[in-house]
Length: 171
Image (cartoon, rainbow, N blue to C red; front, side, top):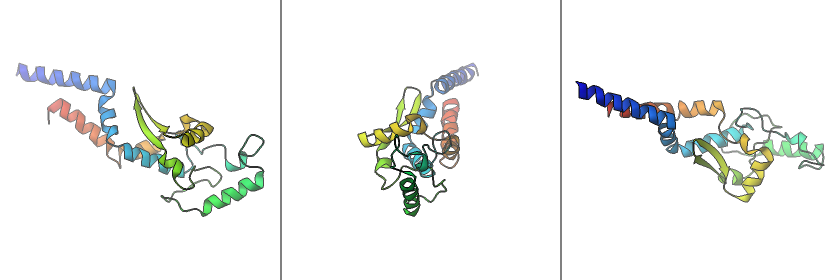
C-alpha cells in the first residue's frame, strides 16, 4: 500500500512539473500544427487578428500618402474585387477588413513555431515578412474563439486530459 501511495505521489509530482513547464500542452499542440494553421487561415479569411478584432488598416484607410492605394476610389474598387474572389473556406467578413488572401501564396508562407514557452505564427519568406510587418506580428496567432475550436472540435482538451491520466494512472 505504501509503495502504491509513493508511486501516486511521484506521478502527481511529475504531472505538476509537466503542467508547470508546459510540456504536456506543448506536446499535444505539436500534433496539431496543421489544425492550428487551418484555424489561422480561417481567422484571416474572416479578416480577424489574434485579438478577435478586424485587421487594420481597412482598405479605405490604406490610402496614400502613407498607405497602399492611390485614392479612396481605388481602395473601394479593390474592396469590391476582393468580394468577387473564391476562397478556400466560406466565412463572414467585414468587406472593408483585409483578409490577406488573393491566391494563397501568403497563407502558404507562414508556419507554427514553438519557442521556449510560446507558440507563434511566423513568416517563412521575405514576402510574408513584409505583410506581417505591415499588420504587426502580434496580430497573427489564434484568437480566443479559434482556441475554443482547437480545444473542442479538434480534440486538444481531450488529448491533454488523456496525457494527464497517463501520467497519474499509467494507462
